[in-house]
Length: 321
Image (cartoon, rainbow, N blue to C red; front, top):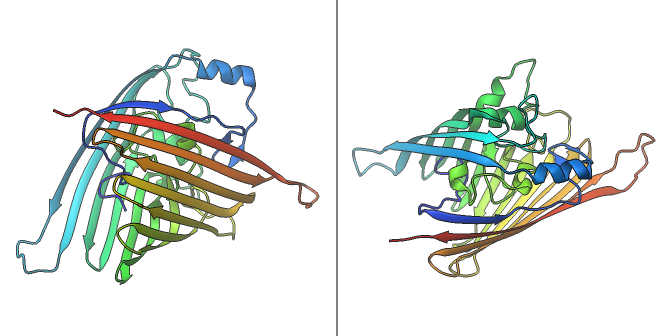
């Protein structure tokens, strides 16, 4: 679980970030497929992107005055991500293409994401609740309505957990996604803008998560979810997710995450990434996603699957001194 808004992927030094953004044979918009026009896509990706992004984070914590009390921690944190972006395609409505889920407004200063988060943890229970606002919500939470109310869109995280046994935790609620290397918080990511890989996989999920830290090197996680990036359930089908993280040696992390569920039709998805620290200054992240979505057939017959894939390579150099 994150100690501050976003994922645990944090780098505290100044970074030089060079990212190879992924390509995809089939591009997706969250819960549906699109077949973009090649000429239009070429134009979209040949634009020169001018982006100014400022991310600010502040945090504080309250601890027991009496050190004999059981360990516990109450932490408050805040995060602000503002930007200016100019799209040389000059969309007349100022909206960038629908497959872009971050920094989506053209030629204006705007708020991408602002987060207020409260977290509590001791050796037996833990939980957090957070609120957020910004253009990030307009793209990622567009479907989150309950009885005509949009209040759920403003919930960043809301979950609680209990320790069932040593190194075994059960958490439930609105959780950060178990899929992918990038998160909703720019400061925790290797690059400010997100890859297409990240924008077309979940940033959040709702359900129950069982986490077993087998040892210092291996962590196993199983999840039962409402669906693919969903707070509000839209059918009676639940999805299943898994995550395996393994550290074979110091400076190496291997991750495997899966999703099995129905998003209209059956969807199967696997995310793999590997993180290497060959030196104290250099970090290398490589990732590969692959997914299958069953093609709908009005006759009820099985008509095969569409599939998509995304590779990614990112190099980060930390300057010290």
